[in-house]
Amino acid sequence: MPLVAADRLYLDHAATTPLLPEAKAAMVEAMERWANPSSPHAEGRAARAALEEARARIATALGWNGHVLFTSGASEAIAIGLGRAKVGRILTSPVEHDSVLRITPCAERLPVTRDGRVSSVEAFHFLEEESGPSARSERAEGKTLLVIQHVNNETGVVQPLEDGGEGVILFADCAQSAGKLALPKADMIAISAHKFGGPPGVGALLVRDLALLRPSGGQEQGYRAGTENLPGVLAMAAALEHREDWLPSAGRLRVRLEAAIEAAGGDVIARDAPRIPSIASYRMPGVSARAQLIQFDLAGIAVSAGSACSSGSLKTSHVLRAMGWDETAAGEVIRVSFGPDTSEADIDRFLDRWISIADRSR
Image 1 (cartoon, rainbow, N blue to C red):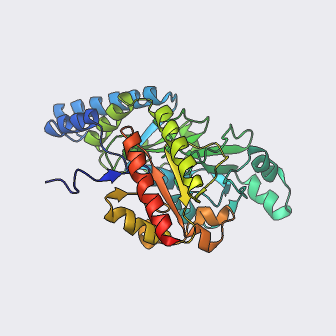
Image 2 (image 1 turned 135 degrees about the vertical axis):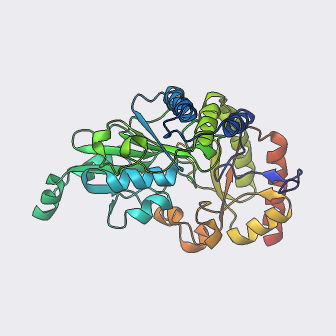
Image 3 (image 1 turned 90 degrees about the vertical axis):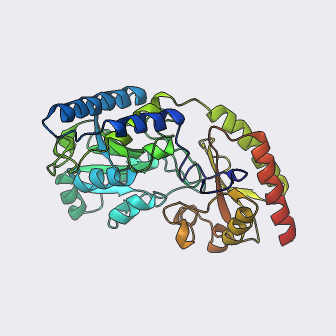
């Protein structure tokens, strides 16, 4: 029996997107011939061969020429990369995902503009500023780790990521962009399979040079302990190889949606910033995000407010506050995110409900 009714409309693909048929088939097949890739017997060696083949397939599909370390998802990839990087300073922004902010409480935060962007010019000027002997001493202990989300998970804003340059290690959180946009030229990248049609519980840390990290022992060349999730890895590889470029279609749908929302008195968050077509946030003045979510859910429409990792708490979005929105306005914003199968009829259904809720509030 399905968990939800078939007539519901799912517009929360940034939280997780449905498993592609090819990924499901690969996962089921792997489960039927499962063995531990670290075992020395024939079955284990066969599992190891399949794992390494999938590693190469994933690198090829992403256009990545560095190392691929399998993890349980992007959050673990971020924890490994940030926790074990050989650096003396960490620099990031206040609009990063919670998984970054939680483990970098003492990091320096770059300011962002009203549209949520960190200018590369601002970032590197900030890096070069002198702030006294203690700061210079800290820099001397190691390189600077610059941690920036490629695509923001709440607003869809695309950051202008470039090579970090001399003395800078660039870590890109690509949970929302991998499998959709070309990867940036970063030293380390975090990806998550369930954001592009793979299963939950598997992801990877892409590393240009393993010398950037301190090893911990165990599997994954000594950088991540624990039995590798072979079924998940094979499903992730299949999802990347069978993905389609549906973003142009999503872009056309979003243009139509946003014109109607603005005509009805709503606000488009980061309207003029470069954004991935599949993610957008909208403010309905006078109606709290919580009230909107309840009414959309009762109408059979799944959307969210903020990040899926923190929306259960219904806290005001730290991303919107960092962009300059006051607490009241930030608390009136919901996120809508499209998938490969989102249609014009879906947009019309969402718009009808959005306009109905907004009209009742007036």
